[in-house]
Image (cartoon, rainbow, N blue to C red; front, side, top):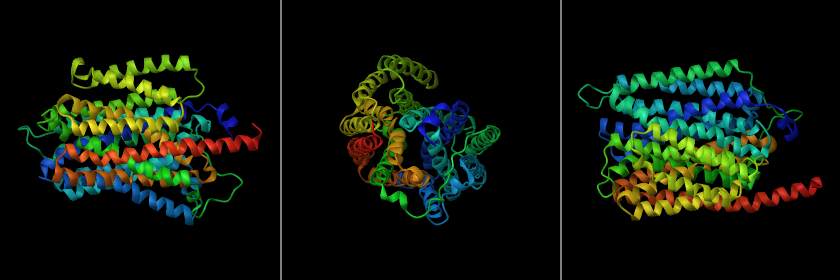
Length: 472
C-alpha cells in the first residue's frame, strides 16, 4: 500500500483501539517488577533465582517468535494468511490464559507453576508484539511510523507507570494476609481481573472494523529473505540489548533503593519510585511522538511538547504516593530530555544514539555515587529509554517491504534480552552487590548508541539512493 493512499485514510479508530491494548499489556508486563521481590520473599529465593520470573516471561518471546519465524520461512508468513486482526485476538486470548493460570499456581503455592503461567503469558504478548507493532507502523505513511509507535508505546508506558502503585497495593496490601505475612493467594484475584480485562479488550477489538494489510499480487514470503538486510540484523542485536537493559534496571530498582548506601527505603516506598522510572518512559514517548512527527512545525513542536510534559508530569504526581519535593528532581530530566530531542533534530537514528549516550552516563553515575544522586541517576534512565523500542523497531524493519512481518518476528525474538540480561545481572548481584551489577546495562546501551550511529549513516544513504532513482 503506498504512502499516498495511506495518508488519505483515517485510521483514528483502529489506532485508539490498539492503543488501549498497548496500555493493558504494559500494565501486566510491569507487574513482573512487583512479583520479583514478592516471590523472592515468599519462596526464599536468591537474586538469581528470582530473575527466573523475567527469564521465563521474556524467554517466551524468543520461543514464540522463533516458531513464528520458522513457520514463515517454510509455510509463508502466518499473519499474511490470517490477517492482523485474527493474530491480535489470538495473542490476547493466549495472554488471558496465562493470567488465569496464576490461580492454580497460587493455590498450590508452587514457584515452577508461577513460572509456567508467566511463560504462557509471555507467549501471548509475543504474538501481540509481532502483530500489533507492525500493524501500527502500517497505519499511515512510513516516515511517521516512529511517531505513531511512540504514541501507542506512551500508553503502554502509562500502564507500566500505574502498575507498581496499583499492582503493589493489590498484592502487598489489599489481597495480602491480614497479619501482613506473604501468601501466594494474594496473586489470585488480581490476575483473574487482568484476564477479564484482556477478554473485554478482545471483545472490543472483534467489534471494531480494522483495515487489513496483506501481500497483494505476490507469492507468500518464504525462505530467509529478511536476513539479507544488514540494518535488520544489527537492529535485532540492538533490541536484545535495549529490552535487556530496560528490564534489568527496572527489576533491580526496588533492591537498589533498599541499599543502605543508596536510600535505605522499604518496598512500600520504593514501588512509588519505580513508578517514576516507568513514568519517565511515558513522558519521553509522548514527547517522542510529537518530536518525530514531521508534519508539525518546529515552533508548534516546542509548544506541544511543553504542554504534554506538564500534563503527564501532573498525572504521574497524582498517581505516586510522593510529595512534590520528592519528585521535583524529575523536572531536570524532563528539561534534559527536551534538549536531547532538539539536538536529535527529529531524526529517529540520531535521537536514539543521543539517548543511549545519556543512559550510559546515568548508569555510571548510579554505580559510583551514593544517596539521592545515585537514586536520581537510576530513575532518570526511564525517560531516556522512552523512544528506544519504537525507534529501534522502525529502523530495523525500515524498507523491508514484503519481508516486514518476517523481519518483525526477528526483532521481537530479540526481546529475549529481557530474559538473559537480568539473569546475568542477578548473578553479579549475588557476587558483587546490587550497585556494581549495573555494569551489564552499560554495555547494552553502548551497543544501542552504535546502532543509532550506524543507521544515521546507512539508512541516510539508502534514502538518498531511493530519491535519486525516483528523480527527487
